[in-house]
Image 1 (cartoon, rainbow, N blue to C red):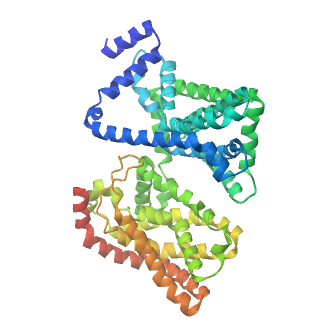
Image 2 (image 1 turned 90 degrees about the vertical axis):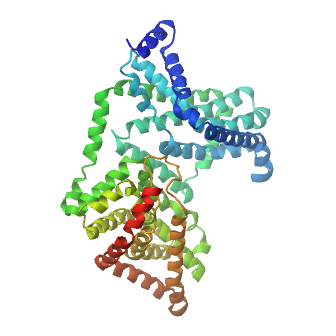
Image 3 (image 1 turned 30 degrees about the vertical axis):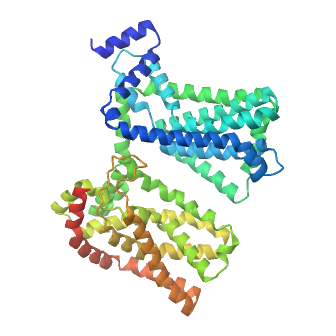
Length: 511
């Protein structure tokens, strides 16, 4: 019997199997080559985390004074704090859905050992709790609890209040974990849940629904009726049990194969088969985006930027009609409808930096290759424009500007960005972390600046000489012209690619 099996058997006789799993995990961290190799980096990040933790503690300690004196003078700071807790809960859940790690993959290596699946599931769920998403909020909430809540409310009410917040943190942890576990088997429900949260945020921005008032009432009830604290705790316990049951049932090799088969089925992209070689190249790009976290972020980030306009459009001064505000509306419209073109187009060759040499040595028609890139950008840009049509609520002028910038993006911005991407020589490591800055440099910022400069050069003279309508109409016609003559423009890009391909290849090998 192997050493691990013997140790597992001994632990099962002496005590908790979950304890052995925790003990084994600590050993794996301590014995990892990276633990000693990256000791200096770990110490540095540990110090940075300690500084952040200290700042959060100080913020929590003085929070009751800040709320009562600066933010909302004359109001109960606890009520003000309760009013924003719903926003914290929603944002926390969305952030967890994106960044919280899924621990179930680590647990599968124990399946072949004499360890019960129930113990493995408990170990995974306990390990999921050890995240900064759970620790940092408490550094603010606990000092505020002792300085702001306990002195002004009853002991039972204060205890119920803090237990309700702990229950919500606990619940968010396991809601995000369950969604990530179920994402591949049931993505539709996940997308519906995220869309519902985004819809609630939109209603709040449009003043059609007041989440802050509901939050104040909800959390204030725990201070008045302490027994209600059982509800979030029971909800957290139920979510723990649901996660545990799901893990016990799915920690099998055939389930892993089933998930792989389901992913393979979803990645067939049958609707692209009718487009010949272009469809094949687009399907390859889609597979690359779906299989790598750093590339996958380019798929959902444009959806978030659709809501970028909510920061500006509700304010009347942005629709006043003067030249500066009109240009600013064009700037916002460019980002809303063209963010995917900018995020993908600027790194379109960098995504393939690992096998860029293979592309150069294969018999690939570069016009078809670049056309597939162009159509791939259009495939995601058009849905973003459809989503932006909702901004007509703020006025017809915003609808017109967004429509013009959509046309400009597909007919001008896309080719301008692809041209600039031939100057990008930084290798893009798809295996790096989601928040890694590797492969990102000043080139992206320069490209966005040049795009805004191009907009200014094209729009401002026309605006001053012929007026707003002529300027916007000209921008739209340029976009329509670029779309209809895209084959000719792509031919120019092919010549640019051939001029720069060896320079790009050398840069990808060296970075």
